[in-house]
Length: 357
Image (tube, rainbow, N blue to C red; front, top):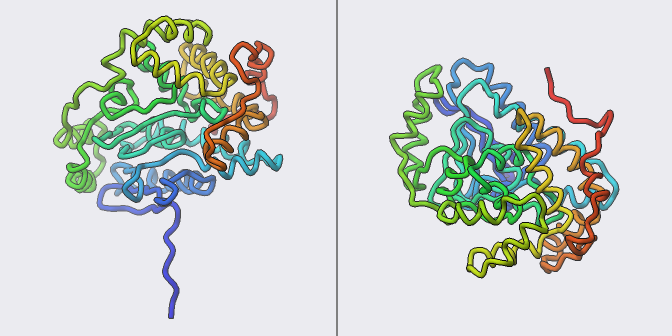
């Protein structure tokens, strides 16, 4: 008797005019491994060279979401053992993120359910980013001693006002409407409409332009009600428009509103070091000329994260032991000195991130 056939973690195939890339680890909400990242890059090679492929379609298996992020358990284990998975994984992942942003064919990402961390990296830089009534997008890395990476600093600083600062520091969830407002997405398509849209995309004309793909999506798209962050845009701009974490905290402390106090409570449980590093990265990213520039600086910071106490402790508390009681070092914002923050911004010499071509 033959055993059951095991599907790969990344399914790559052509369906009509669409080159389909399906993340296929539904039990892990399609968390991205190094092998999956490499297979995705190879799939982009294949589909770019195939004249019968008009567009790329990225989706996640299962009902829970496109991708919950990178495989942080593997990164945690490597960091504890003094390995180099972080150095290798982030380098290859970031190069692919930059490639997606410049991909020569329409790149359609179906951002249904959870889309977090690395999931944003493979979806948020695409040319056509679809959200739904079930979408929950977040960059919650400050909660595990990290920062919004995979080009997150580029995306967050292209959001209106201080919306990106708010989402980057709190790690709060964007619904579909707020994702469009924050410029993380382009179109809102209710989940119930997806099957019909997906079929229409597979039937796209050969050599379909970005405008033609946009037209197909528009037939199924709807206008969502405003999300909570957009409704609080003025207050968010006022609270998060400061240049230091201390000033942001003070602004929130001075406002007794429920929204302000919820944001303050959230900041108080994040890694103090991550908060300061994230804010500095975000402020600097406003002046970067390209996604690639932001990724270079993110990679410098990521290499420091990988050898930091907070990353291992943050993953332990959130994912391994799940006690939600991380013991950050330093433990307070006041104890995070400029010298500590500077370590995340050092030139890495031969380890600097470089892009092909």
